[in-house]
Amino acid sequence: MTTVDGGTPATGAGPAPGFDLRRLLAERGGERYALHARHLNPQLPRMLRTLGFDKVYERAEGAHFWDAEGNDHLDMLAGFGVMGLGRHHPVIRQALHDVLDLSLPDLTRFDCPPLPGLLAERLLAYTPHLHRAFFCSSGTEAVETALKFARRATGRPRVLHCAHSFHGLTTGALSVNGERSFRDGFGPLLPDTAVPLGDLDALRRELRAGDVAGLIVEPVQGKGVHAAPPGYLRAAQELLHRHKALLIADEVQTGLGRTGDFHAHQHEDGVKPDLVCLAKALSGGYVPVGATLGTDEVFAKVYSSMDRVLVHSASFGANAQAMAAGLAVLDVMEREDTVAHVRRVGERLRSRLAALVPRYELLHEVRGRGLMIGIEFGRPESLRLRSRWAMLQAARKGLFAQMVVAPLLHRHRILTQVSGDHLEVIKLIPPLVVDEADVDRFVDAFTQVMDEAQDGGLLWEFGRTLVRQAVVHR
Image (tube, rainbow, N blue to C red; front, side, top):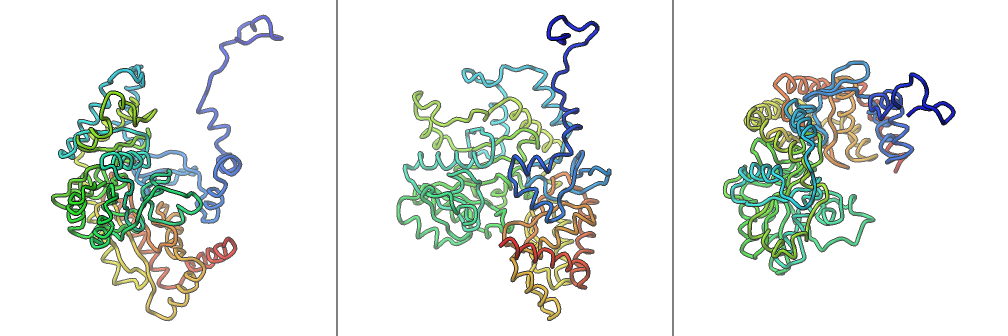
């Protein structure tokens, strides 16, 4: 209560103002980059300013967001796949309003609320060979769960992974991360071995040691967008089972329709992973959520008695908001036939981009499935372009791809990003709700950027700027 001189309540004064989020953002929102530089990762605002990505976005809907000047931007990144159904889908928003308005007795820890069971039932219907689900808060936590479960179920310590894989950045997930740049300085990690994606002989050699709990694999690798070769997952599964090891499918980015199947491993007949990791799009873009699906046999080894009822748990793993968001996501996907939409629109995007490969000597390959597409650049043939390409490569591999990403944003208001460090690959993972007009907008903009790169225009001036930055910060 407001008082005068700390004593008598002030005459006519209303209640003291409470927390006002709108006012806070209005008053302090302009400090966003300074706040990050001062209190969070200082390299993020530095990187964004270097690339000219230090924009201010005010609102978003579906596959689009708008900057402070009201300009529309097309999102071809989807928050690295989190925004599967776009931003602020009305069905998911309403589900979250509903669950808050119900004032549920959430996370009591000593009851069995209905929402986790209902979401598990819906998810498992898409993988009928799996029987149980564990809910957590992120993709890396889903991977940690799978690693623990595989080691417990088999009694073996070592988990294999594929070269160039990405499964998360917590310690267990980092142990099966195929990129040294992420691992350096954080060891020692769990026992692991990398095998090339698609190399069955390498897998067979490792399994002979008898200490392998399983193989974790992305059906389509996020780094570089490389799909497992046809028949590899099925053959790997047979080898693993012959040696009493498990197949773990990391579908954190590829799951929930991204590749034109509900799960990417379903692209190949007969593939039935023992464990499947999910996250990202399951959140609806609102509430962090992850899930590890598995067989009865695996879960029975982990939760083998009442004494072990809490042997693996997650503080926020099955909270009502996350479960409501997940249920709403699945409902929307079924009602809007999202998987079929992804197949249709993804094929339009891939085929239109692939048709450009013969036109540009800097463009080497377009690959991927559904709405997960990699655009790879490579060494040109003409002497004029070769010298410029060599200049970029000498400074830092990946600069040409970044040189394409920048004008897509600056001139065409389309957000994309390079697929990984030191890669000349742009990865497209737009919200699954993009339509034909969005696809055409992207391809038309990309064509204009590539025309300029081929002709040697102002694009290369930006390239020289990137080279200077790369040399300075080596």
